[in-house]
Each structure stands twice: as C-alpha cells, then as structure tokens.
Image (cartoon, rainbow, N blue to C red):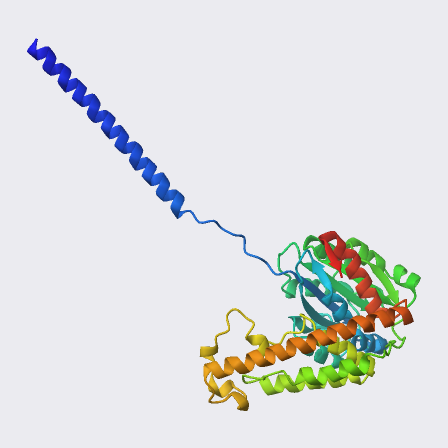
Length: 391
C-alpha cells in the first residue's frame, strides 16, 4: 500500500513539474512575443518629391534661328506655367535638359548632336546655355538624338513624375542610322512621352513622319511658325514688378568659391531677358519669385533651407565680407532677416502677377507664341493622366 501511495505521489509530482514547465514555456513564449512586438518598427514609406522633367531637343541647323530665338524669348513664360502645377497637395520640382542637333559644328561620329545641359534645376544656367546656342547647316538625325537623350539622362523611376521629350526641327523625321520608330518605342517603354514640333507646314510635318514619331510614344504632334516673332504683352503692373526684382536681387547672399560668379550670372540673365522686352524681364522676375527658382549652391538664404545645412560648418573664407568674423548667432540673425525680406518681396511679386495675368487674359485671349503654346498645351493635356492640375 505504501508503495502504491509513493508511486502516486511521484506521478503527481511529475505532472505538476510538467505543467509548471509548460506554464514557464508559455510565459517565455509570451515574453518573447511581447519583446518582438516592442522591437517591430513601423516603416513609413519615404516621400518622393515629384518632378516635371523636360528634355528639349532643338535643331540648330541654318534655318532654325527663329526657333532658337523663340526658345530664348519664351523660356520664362514656360517656367511660370509649370510653376503653377500641382499633384495633389504637392508642388513638383522642375528639371530641364537641353540638346542641340543638326549642326555642322558638332561631331559627325556622334550623329551631329550635343548634350548642352543635363537635367538641371538651375534656371539661370538653363537660360545661359540657351543664349549660347548658334546655328549652322547640318544633318538632322531625330531618332539618334531622342535615343541619346533617353540613355544619357537620369529620368528616375518615380511613377508620379512627368517625363517629356520635346523635339523641334524641320527636316524629315526618318534621317539617321537610328530608326525613329525604335527610339519612340524605347521612350514609351521608359514611360517618357515624346512630343514633336515641326517648324513649318502642318501637313508637311505629317508627310515627314513627325506625327508618327509622336504617336508611337503617345505624345502630341504640333506645327509652329518658328520665324514668327514672340509677342510680349505689356501691362500696367510691369514697372512695379521690375522694381520688386531690384529689391529681390539685394536679398541674395553669395558664398563659396563660385558665389560672386553665380550672382553675376543672375544679373546677366536678367539682362538677357530684358534684351527682348521689359515684359519678358517681368516674366523672368515672376519665375524668380516662384518655388522653382533655387540657388542653394551659392546663396546662403536658399542653402539654409536644406535639411543638411549646418551653420557650424561654414568656412570663414567662404563667407561674404559682411559676415566674416561674425558669430554663428549673428550669422543666423542676418540670414533670418534676409529670408523674411525675400518672402515679403516674392509674395508681392506674386500678388502683382495675379493682376498681370488677368490683364493679359483680357487683352490677348489666345496665346500665339509658337514654342511656348505648343509645349504648355501638350504638358497640361498629358499631365491629367497622372492627376496633375493647374491652379
């Protein structure tokens, strides 16, 4: 009997120990799960800034002086229209690339084409490069220059970006060793729209396969009179806007090895715009008051807006004379004052521009500026697919 009772006690103890171990395991598992839960971090998708990317491919052969002139004269109104674009609540950045083709001064082995400027958001540099273009007779290889722009430029893979190629010229689209059909299909596969602008008669452009080139890349075909002079509408608000431009220029604080050089470039491009008309200089001023005009590489005001900017890392040798030997606190105060001053001026320009736009709309209801009208019409139409809108 004692033996039976002893066996029963041992058995019950074993069960108890097993149950205890099981509970401990459950607790350990529970602790482990709880620990795991606490260590899991919520991953927030990184916000990708949206871009409007425009590669402008210009024929610079002998007959294209008028086209180049339109590009120079109409640049700022094109930029202004793009500055009004919105995708949901986001205002996209703008990058422009520039190619020339069909010029005898260019390398024949490279298809008589040249990358003048890779994608850039430096509007002063874009203007400078446009004004550097000259024309000379040559062979215009449309397929070649399209394909080169597709392969050389950094287009990014953000599905919300607007990616455009605008090619303008007046020779058959079929010239050159690279077939335009292959180039257009290549663009379509990269989600890049090719818009073609024939400089001449609409039907002649169709027979020269300019329309077919656009159709294959789901772009628009357009024809313009490239020799028509750009129309600039003067308004009662122009003088006031140009007065604000003078004030705006005084808010720039050049720094670094190229600061003075870039400030001089800014002034040169003001003059280049003025060379067409005061109204064109006004258009440039409006661009300078928009979010698209950024100069963080040489201006301390714009640089201070970057998340990576650090006042403590500023080199005394890079500072302008008025900030040399100043404390970090003094520099911050100076920059803050200039920044506030600039915001006030830019807002004033935008207010005046709203009235200017209303006046122009009443005076000139139809925009007849060839290159500008063709590009903006195509961009706005194609941007709707990606939910872009214009305010």
